[in-house]
Every structure is written in structure tokens, then in C-alpha cells.
Image (cartoon, rainbow, N blue to C red):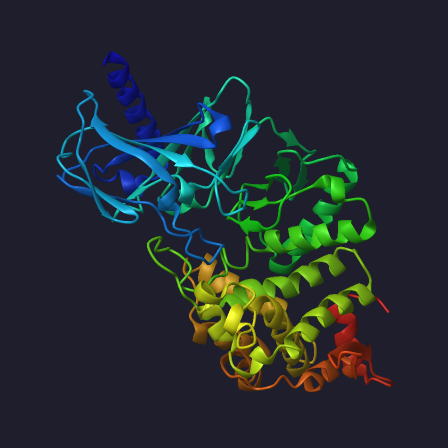
Length: 522
């Protein structure tokens, strides 16, 4: 019993430290949250979570497990992984829990009490959007781990990891509590849920700094490869991305490699990526990896800060639908190509090939006649990020594929209308400063189009028709602005094959736009 009281005293002290860093939350007495994570038996693929909470002036509170993870737009039903849920007060007395539905529980009789909510999380799948535990490491997805009190997402929270004797490292974007290397703080639950934890015996590569800001790569089972070369190349990629916006909005950034697999998910000051350095054995493999990391890194701007208004603050209890994933994901694909080209990786042929792959996917998909880009974004919760499957496979499109193609046409439209004085880069900077930096909010559909038209100095309805209607893309109208054309031939399966080529005898403006876009000096 004495140990419980001592623990509560310590939690209260940590809460004071968190509140001091969050004066708005400290203006009145608020409930306190501390999570304690432990992995007593890693071989069981189970980890244990305790929520210690006190300071309630109401008798009943509803606790919920999130249904999804921002960055992965699918309902995950994380509550299904919960086992052995119990609650008791700081005297050890059991508190009754009532299940309300598949992901929420009601706990009564807690007014003016300190309570501990305990449960286990069973893991069975290695995936970037799922927690996973084995004998050698633990990957903790916060949405898969930490219940929240309904109506209290804005409050500060802390997390303590009880390390086992075999593991020594933690990688996360959370703020470390000074003097306590395995304890972390978040100013609210959105920040907590934005910060996965990787636990084990990790390897950290040589960090680099840009404008005094440290950038790290730390991971589990990262493999054998030229790590100095890799980090030098990654620095060039990050610098190229930063140059687009011109601002670094974090104090430190961490690439977190969770081991071999597929996929990555972006966060405000970190990204979690599946990573296998053993496969970086060719120039093509290196290029593909840098494409992937450029995409995930640029998301710290585009979607985490340059964001549709529907994507933050989040509702973790249902789908957060938006028409704008063609911006958040599609334009990020477009920019991953530009970032690599500007960083000096690959040549014009490589960049053309990347764009051609998307164009060919779009043009050989009959789904373009049935579903708009905006609808693909809104319906991704049912269709998935790459369009519907089964009966829907030929009646849907992917914003990952059509988004960058429309981004290309939009960029050229802006460059042409401003005689190459402005580009899509200027739109991204405008939206970043206007909505994120100055207003701390997302943009509406109309506001994003307005930002594009402000930069272009004219209406861009003809381009935005490609987003909100199924109108066929008039490629050559826009490609011609940069002295390019799209050529078509049919292969042996009668599948359309498009290639990007330069026109003969471009005029001075066309030459200037193409040079500027490719960042060629001559």
C-alpha cells in the first residue's frame, strides 16, 4: 500500500512539471494522466499498460481506445487487442468497469479518487500502424495502447516505460522528462498519439544538423550498409525539402526505423519507417529508399502542418473524412520526385519515369470515369489508399497516383500564368504561413484553391475541374507550358503506354519554365 502512495506522489510531481510547460492547462485543477508501459514477457507478444489518473471532480468517466491512427486512414479497431481490463483505487479496492460498446468503458465512483486502469495489449502483426512485441524489441503505437478519457483530449499526459533487463534504448518524438530518461511528456493527447515508441537495443547512425537543428536516424535491425553515405544522402534530401518551405518547425527530428517491412507513417517531429539496410545494395535501391524517406519527411510540412481542416484536431472515435488527401498525399508524392531531383539524385530521365508511371496507371484505369480525386480522398476509409478492390477495382482511383499527376499540371499552370515568377512551391509556402504559422488551423477546400489562384493571379477552375469532376486530363495543354508533350503508343496487350518528351523548338518561356522546374543551369 505504501508503494502505491509513493507512486502517486511521484506522478503528482511529474504532473506539476508538465503543467508548468503548459500554462493554459495549469490555470485550474485538471485531471492528471500518466501511462506506464511494461513488457514483462516479450515472447508472449503482449505488453501491459497502466493508466494512473486522479483529480476528477465528476463521478463517472468514459475511457475510449482510438479506432484509427492519423496518417493511416483506415478503421483499425485497436480495442480488439485489449485483454484483462481492470481498475482499482490507490488503496487497492476494485472499481467496477462497464463496457459501453466495442471501444469504450465507463468507470464510476472516481470523484476525488486516484485510480489505476490496467490492461494488456496482444500483438500479432508486424505493421507500421500496429503495435508489435517480440523477444528483441517493442514497437508501441500510442493509438493502439493508450485509452483516453472522453472529452479530455486537450489535457497534458506523461508516459513511463518500465525497461526490462535486456533492453536499453527508446526512440520517440516525445519530450523526455529531465532526469528521467525513460519518462516522457506530451502537452495533449494529439501530441501523445503523434509519437510512437520503439524500444529495444537500437542502433543510432551519425546525426547531422541543418541550421543548428539535429536530425537523427535510429532503428531496430537496420542491417549492414554504408551508413555514412546513407546519412550524407539523407541530409541532402532533408535540406532539399526544407528549402521548399524555408522554415524548420521542430527542435529535433528523428527517423525511426522499425525493421524490415513495408510502409511509413509521418509525425510532427519524427517519422516511423519500415527499413532494411541490407537491401541498399544498388543505386536503384538507394534511390527508391530516398524517395520513400523524402515522402515521409515532407509530410512534416504537408499534412502535419499544411493540412485540411478535417485533419486536426482529431476525432479518434470515427473516420475523419476530407476531400483533400490529393493534396496531403498526392502532392507529397509529386514533391518527393522534385526533392530528390533538387538534391542531386537521379537525372531528368528518372524523374520523367516516375511521373510516367503514375500517368500510365491513371490512364489505364477505367475508374477515372467513375470517381473523382475528391471522392477518392473522401471514400478512402472504404476503398483504401490505392482505390477499391473486388467489384470496385475498376470504379475508383488512387490519390497517390492521380494526385501527383494533377499536381504536375497545376504547377505548370501557375508557372505559365506568372511567366515563371511563381510555382506550386509558392502555394505551399503561402498555405504554411497563412494557416499553420499565423492561424494555427487547417484550410478548407475553397481556401486551398484560393491560395493557388492568389499565387497564379488568375482563376484555375480548369485545373480544379480535374479534382472535383471526372473530366479527362488535357495533359498536353499544360505540359506544353514547359516545352513537353505526352506521347502515346499501345503495347502488345493493347495497354496504353505514355512517355514524356521534350518538344522541338520551345520558345524562351517554355525553356525557362522547364529549366526552373528541373533546376537545370543550362
